[in-house]
Image (cartoon, rainbow, N blue to C red; front, side):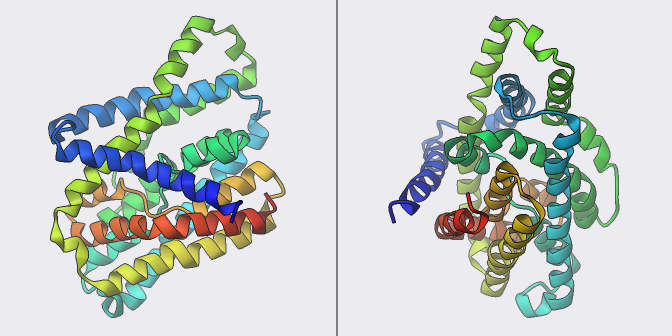
Length: 318
């Protein structure tokens, strides 16, 4: 219990920050009109600054020859998650409350991708600080999978998702940071600039969590998320039981690196990501199914995340 409690406390701390965001929404201190502005500020300024700051102060990234591994894992694990979720939605759809094509696509998109940003990053900083760089590189692969395979699932075609990926400021921040580190030029960046970047980047995760909490409380007001228990149990079963078992088994077999194993464990423990709800709305698919998946896996995550993190720590030998 003495080893599990710090994990539980950290997970609860993350959700408490989200709860503050929910409270601010209820009190109208964080209004819906501000969401787009703050989201753009977080994604296009604060997160890139966070990534650049981490690369500038880290000695963990040695060369591009090793940097590809977490990125490849991020892409492959997310693509695999999409594939499993899509297969289950198509083959068992009516039995788990997914009777239409749009509901099956929404289920596959939301169940297939784990929360890869605002929740695992603070946990990595707390317990596995040396793995933060690997987690950031992993997230690049997840983004590529989301904007290619994920977009193809929800839209029914490949579309122009690659254009959205190429416009991603965090992606370019990572690519530029890797290049600067590889060439040894990061040391020539003036200290005041690095200090400013660090100060801006420090705001990224707290603000992202506050926004996530505000957005989720908006969805909670829609009673539709409480329906269809078969879909809810299927989502939890796939996202938080089946996929973690597969990821932890494969991670221990594939990776000897402690940092990469930590990334695998953190991702295996995560609930569904929030952003796919936005894509589901954008493509006018089944937002009710998307809401059920995201909200219920997040609620279940209050218990399952600490459990998987504790089990993963033992299994991965961390």
